[in-house]
Amino acid sequence: MSLPSVGSVFELFSGLSEQDADGVPPTLHFRDTKGAYFLGECRDMGGTVSTLGASLTRIRAGRAIEAGGSEADYSQVDGMSSEIDGLSSWSGMSTVTQTTDTKTWVNLRAEHQESIQIGGKADVAIESSFMWNPSPKGNVFGITDLAILRTRSNTLWSWQDHGAVHHMFQDLMCLVFGRPCLSRVTSVKREDDQPHSSEGDTRGLWREVYEPTFGRSVEGVEPLDRAKARPLFYLKDVDSDALTSWIDQWKRWSRPTWIAVTTMFQRGTTVESKLLQIGVALEALGYALWKESGPPATPTPSYPALLEWVTDAVGVEHPGIYGARSVAQWRREFNETFKGTKHADKPLPDGNVAHGFAGQGMNLVRGWLGTRLGVSEETLKEGFDRR
Image 1 (cartoon, helix red, strand yellow):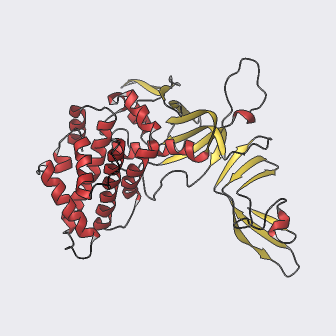
Image 2 (cartoon, one colour; image 1 turned 180 degrees about the vertical axis):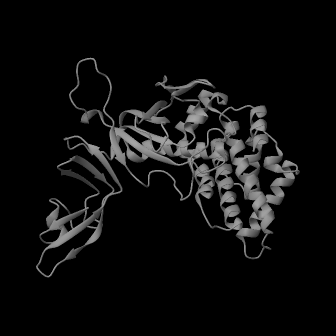
């Protein structure tokens, strides 16, 4: 966005302090002939000055929300919605049913389904959504079938606190499918920025959002093929209380899963770098498990001890995780290979060995998550057998 400036940027914005980091308020309300918008995470991008004295100040906003006419500050919201690749398949939430007579007709029906209530402090729910364009694209008529993840709070939460739950679910989809799954925020809600509605209408208005950096992304990622993609486990395999507890404890569990899943969104990195990052994720996971146990005031355990915390918490042994090794042997060899990538005084591991341990370390995180969410050992073994 570019704005005309009559002098310094401090004259452009009333009440702006000289101590502001870059001379631009972090949030702005913008209106034009098309409507009103709330702009968040604003920062100064410089400007231009002409020889005639006219000047422009350029501002970049991290997010834009199609807000109402109020001055509501959308840096805090009481509802957030996102689309996450794989969520429909994993949850079994689909609006489309089909019947066919192979010789004469095909019938596709799209119909909203009852929401799946997950609950927790963020009142998480998975809701159905579909779009249909009566005009064909080329020769193809189609229905877009989506599952929407929604969080709600009784009070205003920061954008980051709502977003953390959505980021955890993106990581969950990446881990259950073993591949990068894209995510984007679609809408948010504030109860104090609702239009007048007829009596008895309890539907809230959700404002559209554009925030390109909301979820993880990487070029070249294709949407999941529902006919082929098979997750390690499904929502129906999960213990609902365990899932709610995992969501509510996002401050403890989001760090190790975030570090691990980041490797799926990297391109062009070496296998040694990937192994290094997976090793750090396992260290963070072991530390989180150790802290959860309520340890006395003792020094943090060593890396091999933290690794043992992780393997002890994984309720399944499978060649996809440990290969042909015993669990204890795998820990020793993983640690030695990890140290070879981390320390200059250690021999650099063979590339194929590093690649194998990186994949097995990722599967260890995936197996731990399944166990944490109450998935049975038999289901996890079947899931690893499908890979």
